[in-house]
Length: 164
Image (cartoon, rainbow, N blue to C red):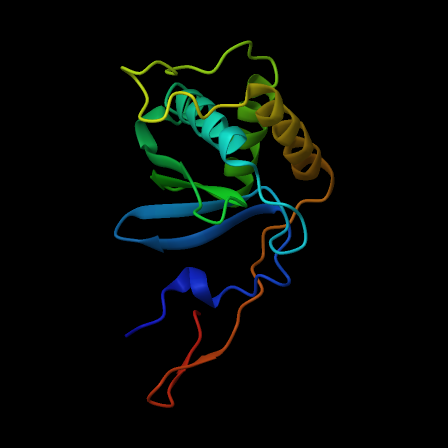
């Protein structure tokens, strides 16, 4: 079985920032890494859920709204994926994300948090979401990272898999 690209990233060297996870079939998947994996706590599930609702709302109403395909959390809760059509650079995604986070920290409520609009409407934490957003905003402004450290992985058949 082939190793998927996201498992070729050296998570021991990964810093908070914005990375291009993959580009194919007319889509770009951006890795918005909020915390440093395995060194800092992951974002709490309720805060990440609120961040997902807020980021999805902002991006789907932003100047890039026609190109937004998906906004959602990573299973490890250290970041978000945003899938876009069109030709967006890491710098453009950084600018959009900064604007989104600036908006999030001003919000008084999380959209779509009723039983009718959310599959787990009780799992939200706006104050912690805003705290994580402020922290990530500071990182994007002051210590920006955007180049993945790659791993070389040897497959069962002895071939070496390395994402170019």
